[in-house]
Image (tube, rainbow, N blue to C red; front, side):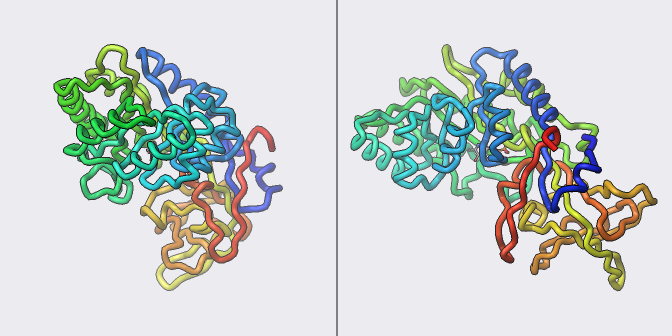
Length: 383
Ligand SMILES: *Cc1c(COP(=O)(O)O)cnc(C)c1O
């Protein structure tokens, strides 16, 4: 991504900048690669980035939406995602959120407990509706990623245990106001090893055999998202490996006649098209190192503080030889550090710094801690 520095200079920092061309290119690749297989449907996980313009471009490309709250359902509808391509997951759905989903006419509730199933049945009954439901199953498949972003292990709060799957489906089949249609999974995020997805395929094949033996019909399988991106080399690898991702599922899953296969990709769609742009406030000479203090903090981009995440950091205003800096924000927390011992072009006050690959779980996770303003998001081509 080449950043228009002159234009960025005019804006008040910190802010997010999004490259719409890269987003469109990424979406085109997704549609081409998923389009090689019949019955593959790709949804966008809205929680990764719900910026209005970003959502609009993704909706235009024809993807469905994966939502985890009522607010996301509203954002998806407002952005133009068709109601019948919206799915809704989450361990704690409030009554108003279930009502909203029913009133909007979303395609599927991904149900995470029998307690939730009972409430959905009751609310759907009151509204005179039948809710389409899939069960999110905890497949006990580990993913080689950060411990805070694995979701498919027995210790995680998500999904229904495998041993409870058949009783839960039988329960749903006896209910008047829900219709069981499928299984849902999501094993974690920032997964780069295709073997992790392959392990999920094998588990789903086993579960499908069990269901078949019980005479239970499944119309759709949803394998969630989780495909990772190259945080180290955003310029070399701006578009994730969708080819291998979809091929892994095409080869590994034994889909039954007429079954549709759904994906929910978040990070892989939007991470590389975004950068957080911040300004250098001070260069502080520490005892053993130099601190580069910027005007963005963990309130603008929390991933480094929350997950120890790596973002490539560049000084886009300087051509001078590199020096090592600890790049830190102004927030009153010791974890407000973007990177330690990073090599950046020699920096001075007012230089612009770019934190790369920040399009996913960046702007959307911003907070007002320390009474700070929320960062804005701009599209490069609109500056
Ligand atoms: C977060 C989430 C996703 C998207 O995960 P990515 O790693 O961003 O692809 C998909 N499905 C569900 C249910 C999620 O919670």
